[in-house]
Image 1 (cartoon, rainbow, N blue to C red):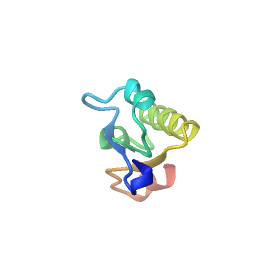
Image 2 (image 1 turned 90 degrees about the vertical axis):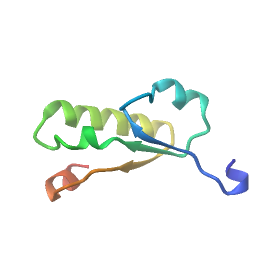
Image 3 (image 1 turned 30 degrees about the horizontal axis):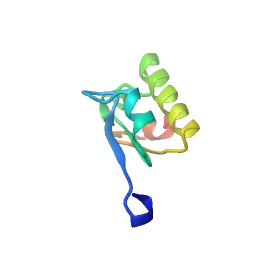
Image 4 (image 1 turned 180 degrees about the vertical axis):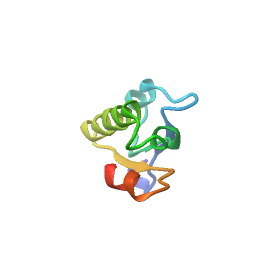
Length: 79
């Protein structure tokens, strides 16, 4: 796909039907972290840990990361 100029992204990772299996099976370029995980940043410890874990996994797999749903500067600073 990349040879033809296409890139593949998983939207809303961590919500709905997304799973770790697609990270292994699809030739992905980008992982978009779902806004439901961003909403609690930086106050909610669990949200922070989930975002940190998903980000670390994406980096290890060589994927770009897109974060959706940033609503205030504290969230942006955390990310």
